[in-house]
Amino acid sequence: MYRDEPLDDEAELRELVGDAPVDRVLAAGGADAVAVAADALRILQGWVTPQQCATWLTTPSRRLGDRDPLTALADGHADDVLDALRAYLAAQG
Image (cartoon, rainbow, N blue to C red):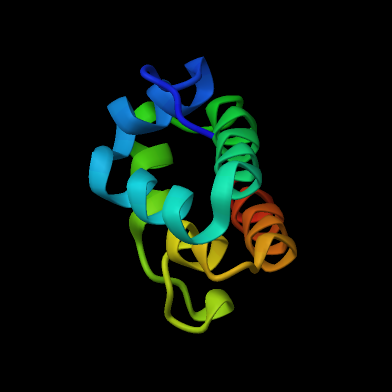
């Protein structure tokens, strides 16, 4: 599907982490992977600062096989990303 402007959630992700990571997720995982990334962002926003959100989404994690969450989403590992998110947030409390 072709669209001229990104959806609101996608635009917010782009603003936070940049175009390249979101383009990679969109190209490899499609709109569903971007939707999971947006869901993760919404959850993170309730717990940490915007900078911490961006850092979590783009920093490699041992829980994700040394991939960052966006790369893991692009590779089709949404459940693993959500599990890693839950563990991260549990450590914040």
